[in-house]
Image (cartoon, rainbow, N blue to C red; front, side, top):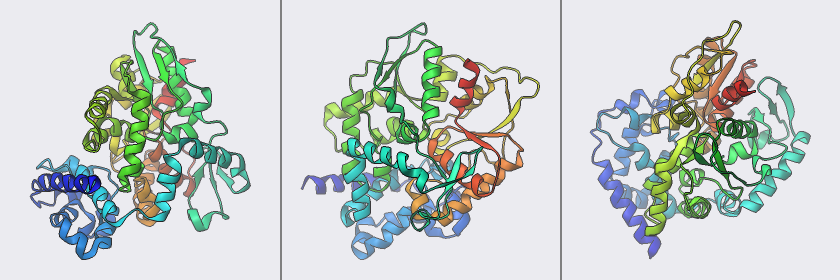
Length: 429
């Protein structure tokens, strides 16, 4: 009965949000999926029209509703462009939770989310095992990007070019708990799953920057996934389990900010957790609100709180172009700070690509379910990067880095893919 009441509450919230859509179609011009398929059902206006009668449509053909909802990157481009201020991203997240509660979670996703990701010890051990044996299944293909391919795993992974799991995860550093230094600031560091297990160089760069500027660090190793992958698949139970685990770890709030190097993770703290908090107790909602206020992207922290400024590019500086991740720019409004952080490295000269804030096509599980569409979108991003002639492309989201690396590696490009904080940390000796 509690679950049913929860779903009814979400349905009512959905009805209140949907009425704002005027069917003007402005979302068509910015939807990367619609640009590839040309189908009205794939754009926000079409999905919202369907959701107006969600309770009826669920009974009529729930699978068809789910199929249309799943064909969305959750990039937020439609919401950012909507003249009526319709929060389409919020609507689609709630709708996915409702339809999944009605249909049930697929066995594969149940195994991944409830059998693995919500069991951190098992999750970490399985990926540690994978890092030891990955060399037997993959062949390196691009030394600049650091990518590999695998014919053996192609039935599962397709023709993707993959980045390797790290030999040692970031949490291998152990829990870090230090007092504020010269800056007078102390931050919590939420590194996120991909940085912990793949892009450990990004996590090490964050620690280097914080120590250089005299910032106290709280980095607990018992932190877990932010819950967005579970929620994007409509699995409200796994999402709430993961949020509660993180509330226990970060709930004291004895820090000035909670930083992440991932646009999606920051958006989870700042936006998604408060949005999807109706299943939590009053005290838990207060903790969620406290963390939302303190959540900050690492680029914004470096530029706005540490006061880093741009330097003149040195002779022979390499060129860097910037991809603006959807959750970083469209959800959090962070883009100028990224350019400031990169501008602090005198060995880099910035060159803008066309459509720097156009989605790269990753979209988390969208990439797994709709790889052909994801690839078409990603190839356009790759073409925009290559057209700049840059030596390096910087992106402040690990998922975008994976997608861009895949697209560029498959094309044989020799352009490095880096996080802005890695490039800034290079200046610190």
